[in-house]
Length: 162
Image (cartoon, rainbow, N blue to C red; front, side):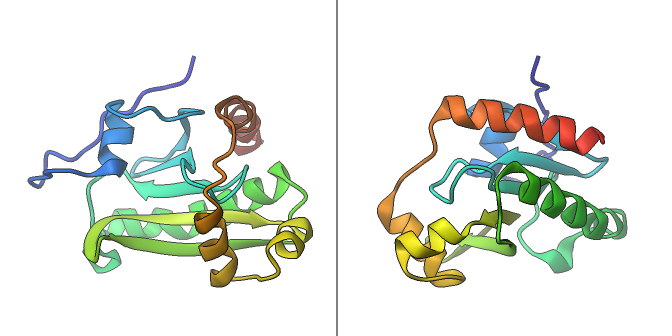
């Protein structure tokens, strides 16, 4: 059974937030919740950044790193370290990118770290790397199959336990 999350969005007025909606189960989240700490959630990315790409987001609705509490900040470094190791084991990654995303339509949104395992095959297929690779992957709009995400998320859960 995949655990559900009750998002701590009630601390601020949130009109529309995809990250919060995913956490509350208001939008489909293939793979469900993979891992959680006291303040952070790990899920599989719902976008076109490839299988094994994880999202690390605060459970509380936060739009800037500077607005994290000290407790949230203390958990972040070790969690990014662990999530990067897990993502690198999910696919045969040449490198694992870690990037903070916090805008949608030019407006600050719920911060989230994208932990993306990148393969030599992906770089060769798109002919680019780094941020250009992410742009090209978004333009291609190839979202991983939901069943593949479910299997990958189950593997990730086990890797977080080890």
